[in-house]
Amino acid sequence: MKRLLSYALALTLVALPNAARAQDDVTFQDGDQIRLANVNNAVVASWGGVYLGPYTGQLMSDPTQPMFTMYCVDYDHEISLGQTWTINESNLGGADLSQTREGVSGLGTYQQTAYLASLFSSWDLLSGVKWDPSHSNQTFGQYFASIGAGVTWNQRNAWSGIHAAIWSLTSASFPTAGSLADQLAHAFAVYAGYQYGQGFAGTGINFAEWSVLSPTPLDGAGTAQEMLVRTSVAPEPQTWVLLGTGMLLLFGFARRRGREVGDV
Image 1 (cartoon, rainbow, N blue to C red):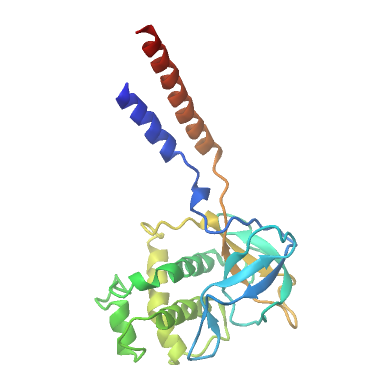
Image 2: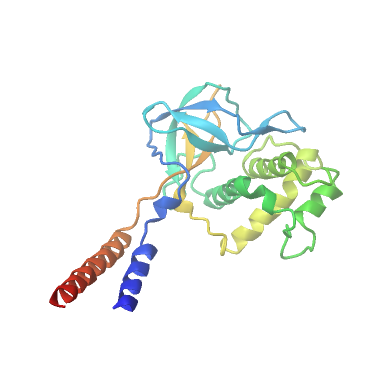
């Protein structure tokens, strides 16, 4: 009986929806208005004076929802603190990308930028990691030291490299080859390309949790930057079925156990 009860409990735990892993419990839809609330968590690049890392956004269409984290994937346009703009939302789990700046052929690019954005929270773990697993034995820390970015692995160098790699993938106006920004971007861009070639196997990233917030209109004077956000994922129907099955098994075992105790 105890063994069967353990199996039922394990089944229930496995069935817990993926949404529990999401960072921000905010939902978006086409026509929403968002505002750049602050950049308090960001650092400033020494090579361009631009903010790097996560920004904080607010959904002005529904201010009752919590603030959310967003990542800029667009170096070609500008926004200012407190600015509000209208967006269209495109999920990377299979949505139509025709409303994005990269268009319907840009899925691979956006997947790489989402993967790079996920590294902002784990930058301190990458110092000893090989940045080009297919060709080089050099680690991120060794590479940054070799280009004069500082022997000590630190947040500014790491975030500079991550965000520069994102912008190098999406933005024509990103600094030219050979610049410090380009050198900082190189290791991370190679790393993202390698993971893309491997189908992101073993990375744990779920692209259904990532969406592109594109300004509308896409082009024209004063149009805002494009952002990435990580959002909650509604569990698949079979997940709820599995969860329900586990709960019913637990309930059935509990009732049977109660009758056995009563008989004694």
